[in-house]
Image 1 (cartoon, each protein chain N blue to C red):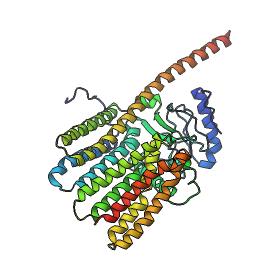
Image 2: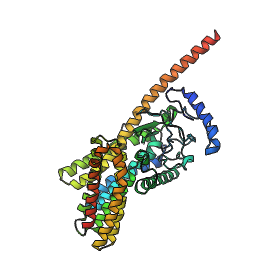
Image 3: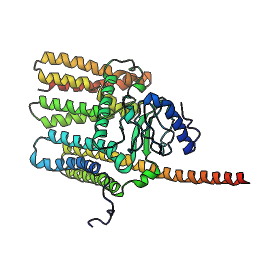
Image 4: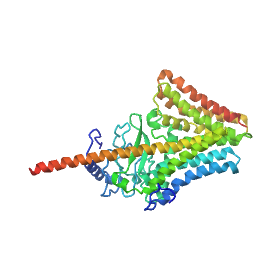
Length: 275
Length: 184
């Protein structure tokens, strides 16, 4: 059920195709199609993509398996709303058509939270998609990394007995700037990685270290701190390894990975040394 | 009439959305400015301001952009692993139906917030406060990201209106030609 996007369809014929597809999919998705709709363009419908939905009156469901057209930056013409019926698909960031303000905000929030959780699971925990970095963090978002960096900074700042503000500022700046610089490093090494995807990834890989910092904050004994931090450091490096190494030429793998490990090791030292 | 630029006549069509659109921006700016007087801890100022700015970014991108001006932008990674920026807008009739006051408020507050953050950034530069510059930098980045995204979206919307108009004219022309020839 793919749209032939190479041939520009007349708007009304495209909407006819949409009608037919909707009738076929009607029992699958149980969506309602209202009669008056704008002509809908070739739609992007990667299952993990965001579903567009600007205005209330329209309720429509994309056939979720249609392949995306390869459009470098050509915008999709009109709005083809869908959304409230696609809650089952994990990453709809642009929620349901807003009938009231409260409903869709909650839906969107829930959807974004679900996306953060799923990204976290993909990056940090073992799963079958790890070896295919392109697919694993396809649906990047920066909320997770933001929370983790702030959390790590707060934990470090809390653990510090003096100069709390500087500790936080330094931690945040180092982590944020470090992520950007590491991404640039990969790009300059001729690697194929997408800027925001890599930022997102490096941020998510901080999750183990954030947990380590939390435990160290609660626990005073140095030996335990060292053990905990080493474990979480190894975990972070293990999480970051497949994505970074797959992005560059195999001969340059070490050049790309070394700075990443260095950054995580220095954060680990920071966590241990803070008192 | 305070500003002669302000459109008259209709009221706000989505007052609650407008309120939230302005709320987080104003809260971030107000907190940042006032906190210097009341709060000692830089950490709290940083976290709260950046959090409010991030919330504002999310609200503008996901909610008020949709509702107030009917535009959306986002980034996708396609099958080939390439990053694609998508811009989307409502069709022309709905766009024309958009409340003028809503969109006026939307765009003006967007620009004004960025200008305000630039001013605050210059302030902290003058006072050599690098850590406050960090806060301002983050908030400014978020504002500018939204401005760029929505401006691109609007340009694409205008381009599509033109394309659609040309296409409609062309199709009407062909269909009237066809009907003319079928009569003959």
